[in-house]
Image (cartoon, rainbow, N blue to C red):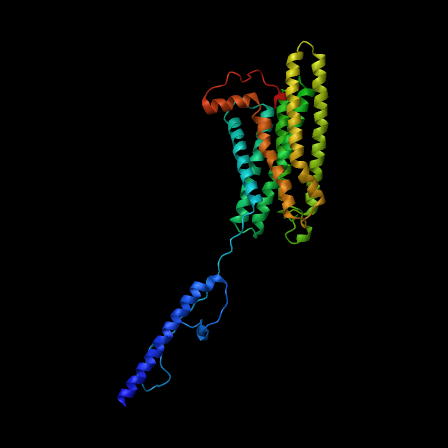
Length: 374
C-alpha cells in the first residue's frame, strides 16, 4: 500500500512538472511570436493567461501530503507606442525657420553694436529683422509643438499660430513702411533728415507692432475654428473668414507698394533730368534705388501672392500638400529680406567686415549713404 501511494505521488509530481514545462514553453512561444501578428492555436491554449504564479494544493487527494505547484502569470504584452511620422514639408519649414533666425539675428546684432547705424532707415531695417527673426522662431516652435509636444492642447496651438500671424504680418507691414520711407526720402529730400522724420519713423514702428500683435491675439480671443472644424481655413485654427480678410489686406498692401514704387520711379527720373550737374551721381543713386525696389517687389510678390490667392479660394477640405506648397515660398521671403535690405547696404557691409575680420575691403564703396541705397 505504501509503495502504491508513493508511486501515485510520483505520478502527480511528474504530471505537475510536465505542466510547468508546458507553461514555460507557452511563455516562450508567446514572447517570440507575439510581434509577428500571426494567430494560431496550440494545446497550451487551455492555460489561463490571466492567472498568477501561486502555491496551491492537489485537490485529487486531500489526505495526502500537500504537493506545491506553480501556475504561470502571463502578463499581457506591452502596447507599442505609436511614433508619429515626420512630414518632409514640416522639416523643410523648420530648416527655413532656422536659416531665417540666423540671418536676421546677425542683422540685429550688427545694428545694435554699431552706434552710427541709427538713422530712420536703419530703424525700419531693424524692425523688419526683428519681425523675420520671430517668424523663424515661430516656424521652429511650430515643428517642436507638432512632434515633441502634445499639439492637442489648445493653448499650444493658439500660441504657435499667434506668433506666426504676428511675425509675418509685421514683416509685411515693415516692408510697406520701408517703401513709404523711400518715397518720403525722395519726395521731401530737403526735410527728410529732420527730427520730424525720426519721430514719424518710430511712430510707424510702434503702430505696426501694436496692430500685428492684435491680429495675432484674435485666435486666442475666440476667433478660431477649434470647436468647428468645417469653418477652418487652410491654416488651422484660423477661420476661413479671418484668412480671407488677411489675404485681402495683403493684396491691398501689395497694390499700395506698387503705386508707391511707380511714384518713386517718376520722382527719381525727374530729379535725374532736372539736376544736370549732378546727373552722374543721381543716376547712379537712382539706378541702384530702382533696382533695389524692383527686386523687393518681385521677391515680395513671387513669395506671398500664391499663398494669398490660395487662402481666398481654398478651405480645410483641400489637400494639405497645396498649403505646404504655397506656405514654403511665403516663408522664403523672410530669407530674402536680409539680403535685399541689409546686406546690400554699404554701411552694414562695412560693419560686417569689421566684425568678421577687422578690416574693410578696398573695393567697398564708402560714399555717403542715401536713403535710396536701402
